[in-house]
Amino acid sequence: MAATAGTLKIEGKSEKQDSQWLVIARRFMRHKLAVISLVLILLIFIASLLAPVITTFPRDAVDISAPTRPGPPGIAGSDGRLHILGIDNLGRDLFTRMLYAARVSLSIAFSVVFLSEAIGVIIGALAGYYKGWVDTVVSRVIEFMITIPLLPILLILSAIMINTDAKLPLPGFVIKGLSAVLLAPEREANQVFVLVMIIVVFGWLGAARLMRGMVLSLSEQDFVESLKALGASDARIIFRHLIPNGIAPILVNASLGLGGVIILEASLSFLGLGVQDPTPTWGNMLNASQSYMFQHPWLPLIPGIPLVIVALGFNFIGDGLRDALDPRLNR
Image 1 (cartoon, helix red, strand yellow):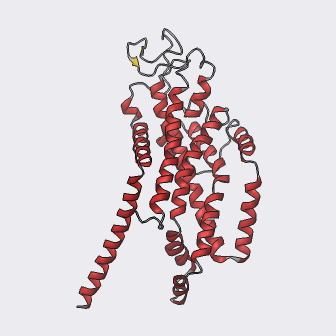
Image 2 (cartoon, rainbow, N blue to C red):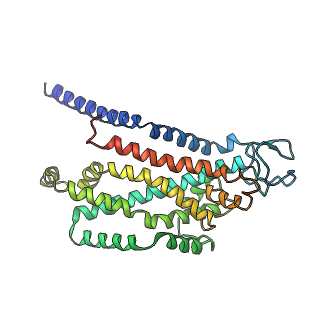
Image 3 (cartoon, rainbow, N blue to C red):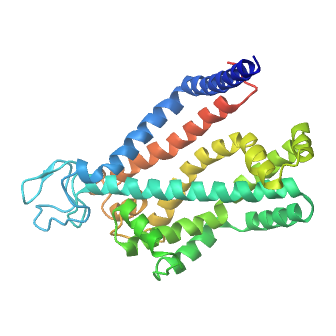
């Protein structure tokens, strides 16, 4: 009988958890712009992963015999193959480069946000749980770094690290793995990794402040005292209970941060201080098109349209997650 009761209790708990996630999913689905944005971003992401299959042109293949460079959408190359979105000033297929640029730009955004949120969550949780001198040191560091003007520092660091081909002391498999993901040489993968690390240095501050506030509030609740009385370790309390219970605003912050990182990377690459050609990103494609935009106004639209769709899309997804995860909404 006891076993049956235990089974019922476990099944009831599972049903409750499932219903909670279903409620969250239904709330998110009511946010039409968030759903549409999620579908569009998934389509762009899948297309970027399948770039070698979708396009028949190599990423950096140059058609030196093309009749005009840049060439308009639908132009036929010297070998008779059609360039759907035209060619750039060097004779490279723009549709191919747009797909590979999506792979690079999205990889940078996901990497930056994942590392920033992970670092910020851990530091913020430690500060909120231990309080005292730990909280004081973390808070002062965050306050100091927030006062630093971000864009000039990023411009200086990018100019030093990327334009000098600086290499970070990393295991070889890290750069080789990134090179395989980006389908780019190791030198180009190193540039991407350096840019990711530069942005992460300043990217963890928001997540740390959010998690610190959540943990400060949660650590005053009775269940934390009960866990301590039962002999639970600090690590178990922090990582098994406090962080999972405070993760909702972090998820919203991460989704909103993805759009910001996409724009930041594009800005740096547009200024020539981000990822360098021939590695395509939406930012350096915009940079390459600016000299021809008055004679060929369609050129900046090729990287610009997916850039705007993705940046806005992540913001709409963040709005949808915020509504779905808000316990005060009963709809």
